Image 1 (cartoon, rainbow, N blue to C red):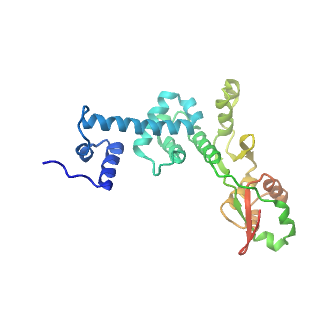
Image 2: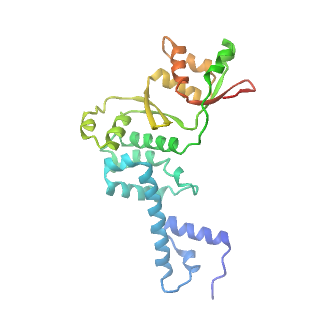
Length: 264
């Protein structure tokens, strides 16, 4: 008996099961056998699909690949692709869970800073592909009173990300990408934790170390906390000086007070 003509949704589910699970089953029945066995034909698509995902990870994590080597990286990437297939067709968004995967990969345990390096590279990837936006004109804040400032909330710039690392991942990242063996050898892995701001600038991607208090203020503001609460949580002698330096970095696009937005 000839198989029934599949609906589009049936065909999509069958192909997905073949590509992601390696089980051809229903998909084989829907493939025309003309010159190439259905299993072999599906195998070509499956290899191409995995290859595309591996390439996407290679582009997002170049420093990680250099540290572990192309062969190890491809093997890890293929394992990850099998466990965590993409949830959308936008491949620039694929790889968010790869750092956590590396942290749990026993074969990578000999490189303790590898997950932090991967987290940094993912932040760089997010910033690189983030939307453009005008930074907040901080001069507008001068018209606000102290009580209003305390209740102010800021909208983070899409091309700005924060990251805390246990290891000096920024130093490793720079040394690896610049192929600077001397700088790599000079890195003290005990130089941590570190607090980073990853930001897109006209000249490229800036990875800046912040003091812990400045980073904590930024993290509070990025999460939507009002300015007063964010500054109160900062354990430093001059929180407003710290805030001024932070705002000058252009990490925000707008701010709001109660229900009225302050234009950038």
